[in-house]
Length: 417
Image (tube, helix red, strand yellow):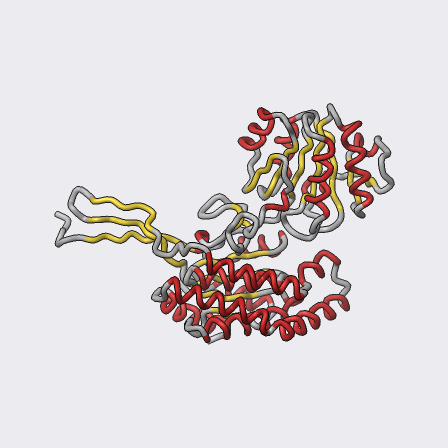
C-alpha cells in the first residue's frame, strides 16, 4: 500500500469517528488549534523562513512570495479565524426539511459531513489552517497536499494543528498531509475513488484545470479570478478611483484582485486620466486599448492585446478598455471573465440592477471593491476556496459547502405494498 493510500485509509477511519463527535467537542478542538498556532509561532515562522529563503533563491515572483510569507500578524489572523469558527453555528445535524408522508413515515433531510476532504493547493500556508479548521468544525477528515514552495511551512502547520486537535479528543488521522511533492503523489490522491469523498483544488489556472481534467473523485472547482471593475457613465469619479486602486493594489496576488478596468466612453476623457495616474503612482502597469493610450495620462501604458482581456496577472498590472456603454461592458465581462467577482461603479439604479442581474459571476458588486469576495469578509469565519462552478456551492465556501445531506425516515412498521 502506498503512503497516499494509507493516508486516505486513516482519514476514512477518522471520518467515521468524527461523525460521532459533538459540536462542543469539535469547538474545543478548534480553540486548541487556535491556541497551538500562537503558542508554537516561532516554530512555524522558522519553517516559513526556510521556505521564503528557498523561494527567493529560485527568483520566485513577488506576488507569490507575498502569498507564501507568514508573519506574526498573519499567524495571529489565522489563529483568530480558527477561534471565530468555534463561535459559528454548527451546520451538522441542521434539519433542511421535514414532513409526514401519507403513509405515516416522518421524513427529514439533514446536513451531514462529506467524510474525507482532500485539498491540492499551491504556496498558500494559510490554506492549511483554513482547511483544517473548516473540516474539523464540520466533522470531516482532511488530507492536505500543498505546493513545494510551502513544504516546510505546511509541515509545521499540519504538525501543530493535528497535535492540538488530537490532544483535545479528535481521532488520529483527522488532519494529515501528503509529504511527497512529486506529481505522482498528487495524481494518486486524485485517483482514490471511494476513499476520497471530495477534492478541492486551490491555486492557479494550470493547477485547477489539471485537477478538473484528471481527477477520478468528485471535484469542487475553484476558479481563477479575472475580475473587472466597470466605471459607468453615472459613476462618482473619486469613488471610482478609490475602488479601482483598492481592487487592484491592496493585494494584487490574490484571486479577488481586479485584473481588468472598463470605463464608459461617455466619461472616459474626464474620469479615466485621474484613475490612470493613481494606478501609476501605485506602481501599476496598464495595458490599454487605443482610446486609453490616446489620453497620454501616464507613462506606463502598454498596448493591450486580445490575450490581455482574459489574463489573470496576479501582479501590479491591469488591462483597460473603453466601452460604449452598459451593454458592451456586460458582454465583455461575460466573454472574458472567469465568473469570480465583478463590480460596477454607478449612481444609476437601473444600470446597477441590470449589472447585478445579467453579469454571470459568483459575486457581483455595486460601488464596492472586488476584494471583499472572501470567506472572512462574508462572515463565514474562513473559507476553503472560492467556487466558480454552479453545482453544490458557488462563491466563498464556508461550513455548509463541506456538508452533504441525508434523508432520515422514522416509521412505525410501514411496508411498501
